[in-house]
Length: 471
Image 1 (tube, rainbow, N blue to C red):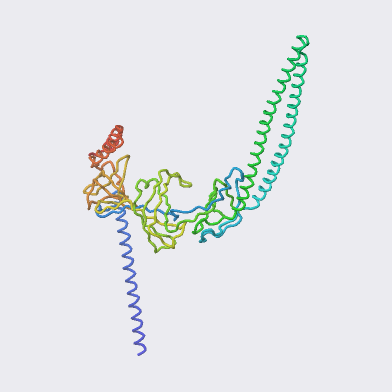
Image 2: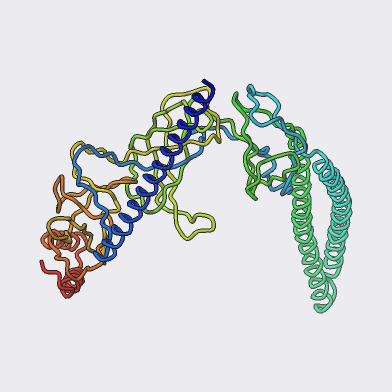
């Protein structure tokens, strides 16, 4: 029994080995066949010259959308700024440091504490201003004493001149019996004394006006210094910044583009410390490249997503499109600012959150469309390669496009087969659809009113035909 059992075991192992060997042979044969077919396939393609990649022309609904990323901002906000008195010409403080701030994002009520400005710089300037005010007051007091002394001297001169006139008149009266020459001299002395009196009276009036003008200038200087002290006192009392209304505190950026923080220096020319945004009305501030900006119009519908809340989907619309572009950092391309209003309100939305914006620039219910890769162009001509019995270069009139597809207004029909790669032997390919090209040039000429367009069109057409492409 034992020998029979062992024999059966040995036979079973042989059968197994035989089966394994047969499977290996089959695998080897299959691999050889696959390798042979691969060699034949690539050899045939090498001999044929190219591998054709095709697609079918489709017809149906097409939506044209532009995808951008943006940042949430409040549409309306209240600015928290430096005290207005800091802009006064009397103050002459051109920058001030922030010494304390509450945490950004804090929700505050009206009149609640926000920040503290540097008191030390105000104290130093106020001390100097008070010393200047005291000096101006001392100058006024000295001027008053000088004025009184000067006017007193002038009054004494007038009194003396009046006495001299009286004396001369007495001498003239006593000389009535004297010789004519003596009388004449006495009359001349009287006239001379009277002229002296008149000059002294006028001199007094002129001196009064002169001293009055000098005193007024000193008083003006004193009032200016007094006003400066008053303004500095007002500024000192206003260095504690409080919220003008309820809201969430969002700090602004200084003149160097850095977020306001403790130690930041502000000036009257960049006075914004923070903003209190209206959280019920939010916008997404985004930028669109110069290629797509012509498609963006005010009123277009937008679907927004929030990176912080992937499950949220919001609706909005375009409310403004910038007329002037701005360069992208480290690039030659330009972008245009576009603002999108978010419909409704959501307590989860916060300023500076990143949004994904899908702007719907067009929606078509029944249009011919093809992949963008199927469109080729030379100069001002756009065309596709239609795969029929022979490949044909078909000029097309294109419409709107999205990231993947482009609408075709004229030139092809649904179901046609197009090449996605350009054929190698272009000289043998026939070009058709010149009537589409001529119509495009005619419309361009009408819009631009430039006859030279026709000449350029004829040159392009002749160049294509010179390559053995007949219309």
